[in-house]
Length: 74
Image 1 (spheres, rainbow, N blue to C red):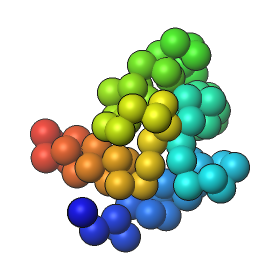
Image 2: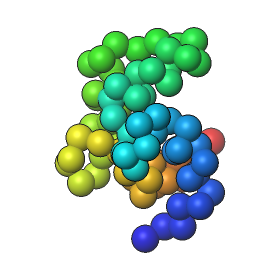
Image 3: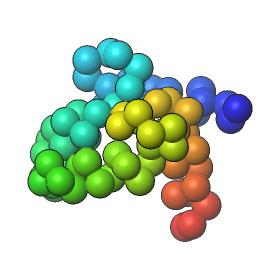
Image 4: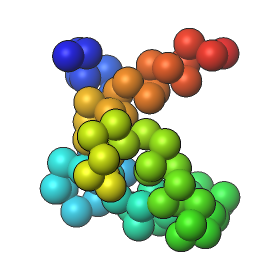
């Protein structure tokens, strides 16, 4: 498993209900706060793209893997 410490603080900011998972609703609220609102469908699609275990939510491990992958593309 990847070391998740590097992204834990960011993950915690997005995980507004502290359930250790990021939902489409939490992602949608984040994007609204950042000034780039997205639709519920877009949020759900984004979660599906990151969710590797199929539970419909993003875990810290999934978030870390995604962030590392995205950083590698730059």
